[in-house]
Image 1 (cartoon, rainbow, N blue to C red):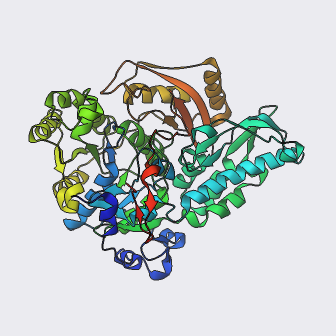
Image 2 (cartoon, one colour):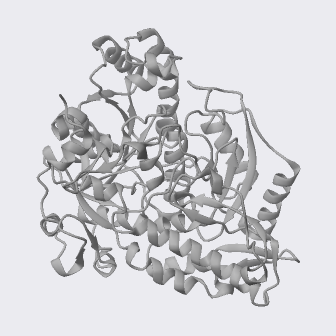
Image 3 (tube, rainbow, N blue to C red):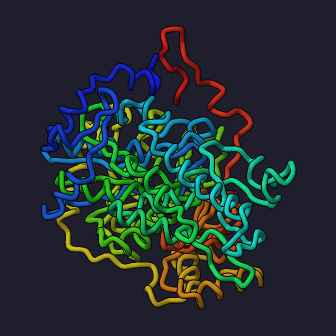
Length: 557
């Protein structure tokens, strides 16, 4: 009987976190341990590394996922271990798991099999408290807004035009739209509001994009929380909120150092979702890793149309970071799914369906390689039920468009199963390349959204209601036109309809809502039926998680 992910993780031989830090040259007085196996690296020490040369950045992305996910985090970990095994000094940078999906449909997000970051239970459950700090900072600002109105409203905030929402790190559909302030005058003024999941919050985005405490404080102060009756913006600094918010986030901003099952060092820091936010781990962690290692593998959430697009058009555009190579994760299962096979039938061999589904992978590959100019390789994340004929069909289908697909068995074999992939990544990193963006800075917000929809999603056009068009036009006129666009849409399809598998084209993207993220410095375009507060499935993962009499967590992924 094979071991579960948590059983594998609980049997790991971890090094004390001080030894992991020492292997990177981090002095003991620059590490703040959180127990024996995790710690935070101090920001002053990281600032001292800025004159060091940068290593090579490798971007991990994927095809459009199935509801179960295709192992992008697992492949990131496996590649990091494999690079170490072939003699390279490597690190990985991952996002922190959110409790919403851990307790919801997906389960844990620390990798799987013999390619995991550990301590797995800690990382999946609370970790070092970063998300709690982000949640507290967001809700502190919300409380200060309502408190200001209650005590005279000197800023003249129009309660109908408060845009700031509270957050929670749990999937809870009942909190999407709420009425607050009920119960009489002592409880403030009743108004409509709502909750988002913490990973969709602007504070999470700011946290991941800030490069220092000063930058964090400045960005928090820039947050537009409401408008006056004369349509003037009210910012967090107008409420004197950004100083206290920075204080809440101060310790969280230092990146978290952990390790893989094979003791490769890993930063796990920040965690925005890519379907409703920008989907990349913190810039501070990535910059630090690039000064501490020769190869840094980082992931961008979901398919290349979402996480990788935002990595390129938001993170790379604003930070100057440039990936030397990209890995596109694919599974035989996902390709059959995009070829029309229903989930219960995915284990059975079906080469014909797989070949139909290859259109999805090839589109992602062309986007990464041809649209953005990043040298790319396809990693076939091997599963036990994959047949030789199916794997051969994937390899042939990728070779037909002039690229390479490599079978990686890291899930079952750890880093040893991804050494061929690691060698190809090293080779690609030596290839000359020049990153291109999906759209230029000078495009209008509408044209930026249209460029993403037509060039990346292969849509025919974009549409929006008159109200949404007016909002976009107003943001353009108010000086936000140079901001990049962050699209919130389903991860399961190039379209806004999760049921359209494969590579739909000539569809229309409906912009349902627009949100200004002035502190994060991008514009969020919410498309289709995507929700910024998810709901729980019929049988949540939480139903199988418990603690035995000895205190050991069981049932976690």
